Image (cartoon, rainbow, N blue to C red; front, side, top):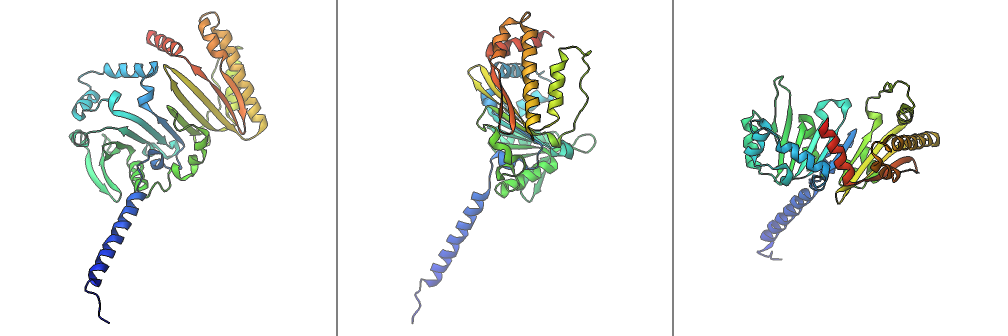
Length: 328
């Protein structure tokens, strides 16, 4: 039987199509979701949606402090050279680290809008060296001791910074679709349901991975110190902290939850938190009576294996804190 003259060409076309499909599959596997780039064995992870928080009184204060940076300061020079304006160009900041693994475990991811060419030039001018890894390029930074961190200019919307090993590992997770990251449901990734990931800011802290300080602060054995000591004592049984806050106009809704293993520990924590709120109300009712109704609205509750405290910090309260801080 005579072969079709198009058989060979058809096979080539089929092979090319399969190659494109495989390439697309590899591209789909790659991820640039910051949560997927955070290692599952991180002891802490925090996400700040800076584009929301900067609108609050506290955020305005941070921006005001940035405005006061000296024109001769290297930070100011870096901003000028890169064209980076934090108040406009940065949307989200994700931070993760494991203290037990040292400073090299620190990882910070910035989402926003970045001029990669200008940033690369500014880094090089400061002694950074461009290196290629199996997962991508990164700029290595060195300090006087020959140690330092690294910066990966992933794309115009994502920068990965931190310890050299942490940045290289994040780039590898990017190529593998987040394998070994929080998004895979391992480590702290199993606890993500405890926070609203769309909140303006949230954090998870594995207290079992952090150094413990058993000694309570000296307070002269005053009655005012008893609730605080009770909270410190109850916190020894807490294995995980889940924190979150959401911007509501110029105010902040917050929630803090502590996970404890048994009913007695949870009850002790709940009682201690209620005691602190009661003592706080008594302490401010003469000097700052306007704070009393704010504190009264705080709620302490037990939910499953966690005890939570939640409430709202109005803009007037946040501004009063900033005003007092500025006077010190």
